[in-house]
Amino acid sequence: MTPFGCRWCGIEKSNHGRRWKRSKGMHGWEQPTQAQIKARMIARRNARTEVTP
Image 1 (tube, rainbow, N blue to C red):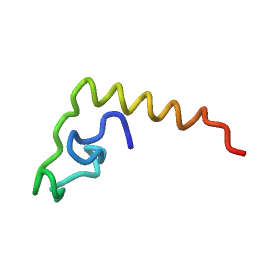
Image 2 (cartoon, rainbow, N blue to C red):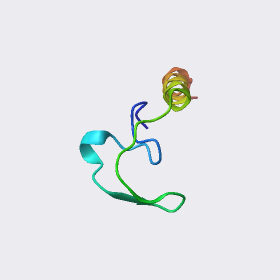
Image 3 (cartoon, rainbow, N blue to C red):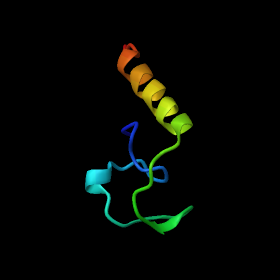
């Protein structure tokens, strides 16, 4: 998931259009909150640094 993806579904703005999400319904791209951006960036960094056996 990209850090700056949609607030509701995580899809990038350039590829979003109108999307359906059960919890939100039909929606257009919405800017993620600062907390979402930070959490996504941390998750992406952690995924890159995990050691696979």
